[in-house]
Image 1 (cartoon, helix red, strand yellow):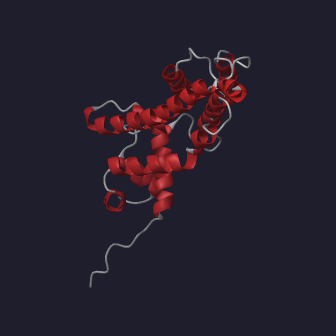
Image 2 (cartoon, helix red, strand yellow; image 1 turned 45 degrees about the vertical axis):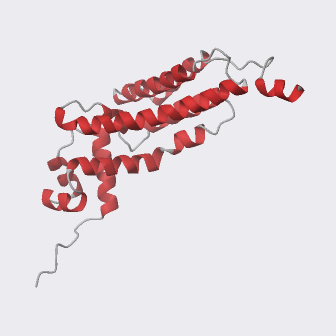
Image 3 (cartoon, rainbow, N blue to C red; image 1 turned 90 degrees about the vertical axis):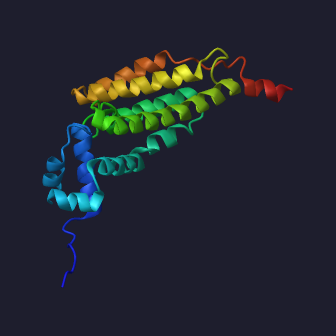
Length: 209
């Protein structure tokens, strides 16, 4: 009597192991053999549980976002655009230098996939990063309308600037730059942030009418 294949590993734990490997080595640098060995199963069992490598990577990205998406969610609720930027940048620094986790950022590592076989993964990562940048554009546009940013501020440019800094911070962390040094970079970046104009805030003008 065929009782079926016994499950020999915990799916959630296996997913966390795969996440750490993809985070450390990137999509292309993580082979099925490496994944199977780290999880403690043979490749057929890995395929049976998660499908192919691409499908497993998608699941790890979803878990990564679930675990770390609060950086954007919480920061976007800050009162000023500068506080939004500070919350995201400092949150990213802590993420990419977190003890016990690989240095760098899984989102950046995944976006560096370059082979033709990885094109779907690269496009997916670009889409996800574009979605986050869109949230920032909307938030900075609101800040400009409220008078928190100067009238000539460019929400699209500021959002792109912030995403570019995030990628740079992740790459520097991957190369071994310390959290302390990266936080200094964040402080320098925030010094050039467009300043709030207290003498002509949109909210104040509305309240005086």
